[in-house]
Each structure stands twice: as C-alpha cells, then as structure tokens.
Image (cartoon, rainbow, N blue to C red; front, side):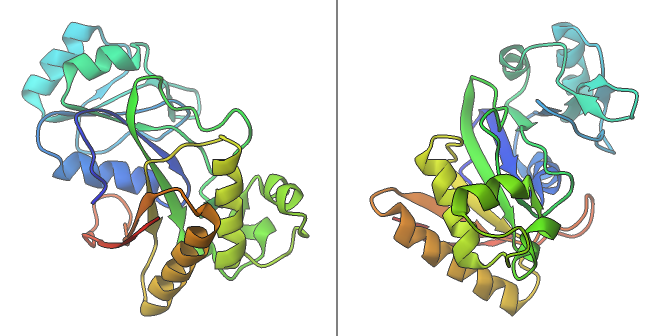
Length: 236
C-alpha cells in the first residue's frame, strides 16, 4: 500500500513511525537497514552496528537480513550513523530512516528545519496518529505552539479532523514537508476509522489539484501482532 521501493525511505510525522519501520523491516523482501537522522531506540532481534565500516555492514547483512545502524548517545538512544545514507543504500536493498521526532505524541507540527530526510530519499511516508483527535492540541501535538500560531487557534483547542487537515495542508503549501503517501495510524476502532476518513475528506478539499494516496492502519508496539491495514481512496 505504501509503495516502498528499493533505496532510501524516510518516515516522518508522529503516532507510529518506529512501529512502521519495525513492520516494514519484517515484511519487505531483501536486506533492510534501519537507521535515523534524528534519534531512535535500538531495534530488538537484529544486529546493532554502532561504528561500522561499509564492509562491516555488508558482512552483517550476510548473517542477518535486517540490521540497525546508528551512533549511540549517553541516553541509550541512537543518532545518525557514521556512514552516510548513500553508502548504506549500496549495502542493502532498503534503508528505512526515521527522519522526525515527536516526543511520543500522536500529532506534530513541523518546524522550518524539519523533517530531516536524507537527500537521496526515494519515498517519504507521513504518519499521523488518530488517537490524538478529539483532544486538546497542547496535550497531543508536538510543537503545538507552531500549529496554533499558523492557524490562529488557542492552545487548548480540540484537535478535530478539520483542524489537523488544515495543519497538514499548511505545511504542504509552504513546502515544509513533501510526503508521497499519508498513513493514518492508530485506527483501533470503527470510530477511529470514521475519524480517519473524515480527516482524509477534509484534506482532499484543501489540497484541491494535488494528489496523495492515503492509507489507514493500526500498528501496535514492536513485535506485537499487526493489522495489515487498508487503503482509502487516494486524495486527489
């Protein structure tokens, strides 16, 4: 559904980026490298390469189809790998990059310098957490002050599908991010799917002459059973 192709794929947004990387790594054919351009926790069940050479990466992928590559920090999290992403793309079929931070919140407003997608990114997936809908912006939106300033709404305004769609459309219009596909995650219930469909419709009206596929899914914590998701009609 996400049309992930060999090469570098950047995952941005909030509400399930890490879970998506984990799911893709297990389901994509070929070899996979998981990495970040910001910060991420190491992935379980696969080799972790912290200061590798290109040969080290290639050797690791001969022993294990998937590997996590990154530079450790004092907090125990990983930051960008010492090898550039173009080099990593020569080593594996897929390089999946978490290219955004959201402080574990389901929704996000991007600053002018975000997201941090590698220059050779071939496809960008924007993740939005549906669990944030219906709650105050200052509780569920990372950098909520940016969203409130852009849309001229109070910080305790409710994150409705229409308001979240306006925030996404504003960032697209101003070139802050350029996703190829939108993934509406955390659709656990029929109500969640209805909210996701409403958000997609609101965004459709705002984008007008643009086109972007929209998918809905429910990605649980790493390693748990996954819903394979569904595809909604493309935004056009």
